[in-house]
Image (cartoon, rainbow, N blue to C red; front, side, top):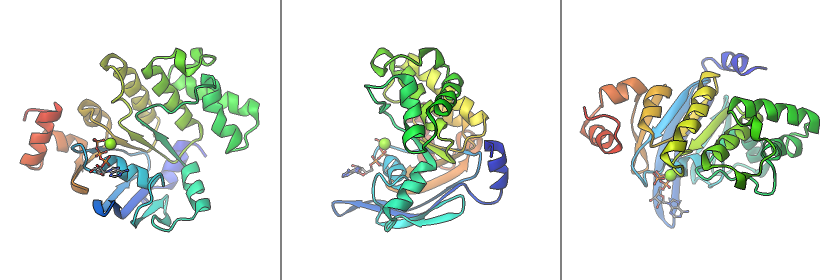
Length: 261
Ligand SMILES: Nc1ncnc2c1ncn2[C@@H]1O[C@H](COP(=O)(O)OP(=O)(O)OP(=O)(O)O)[C@@H](O)[C@H]1O
Ligand SMILES: [Mg+2]
């Protein structure tokens, strides 16, 4: 199934729905029952101050942290986050992609090897087919001409584009991004955002934690604003920026350089 066909098939059922997600660390609750959903083909940006729980939420959604309560529905299939079994976790992970702040590429593998790895080992795809797919994904992010390079030979922006190609390669139902540009020099941020914009235009379903207000405004369909472990505001992106719901959002946007309105 192509991405478009899949998105059409999912009309009416959110691609991702998180309900009542709770998480404590050392007796302190940092997620107080978060609800969030992302439709097929939709790009949702999560904004919010440092420490509001954005990373923890994404990590719970991908079982990198074990939530204390809550459910995750992926294309309508429901999983209890607190009790999900390893096999279920592996299945959900196989159907989702994750792009971290630090690129997490294998240092001892080439660019092509990094993108192929998961296809060959986890998907059991024949090597030749995996390479073909990897080249296609690398072309999408403008990195195929560096397919024989090792990560250490690349800039941070280039490494992050490879990480995006790797996430795309497995044809996930949704890709989570956690501040994919925050470790980059400003001049390298643009190329990574351009690769993400391309992915969004291709119809990929994306949930993006970002401090890049321009990206959220221009590329996201919807903004979810978190504070103190809760979703406090949710709005179409344009409305979120042009008609901030309250003084708190206005102050946040001023600080983040989103607008001075
Ligand atoms: N492994 C951990 N152990 C203990 N506390 C943690 C752990 N991870 C996160 N926290 C706490 O949970 C809260 C939410 O952290 P989280 O990293 O999710 O915030 P964030 O919104 O991603 O912030 P930032 O914008 O700075 O990345 C914070 O108070 C943080 O100190
Ligand atoms: Mg974070």
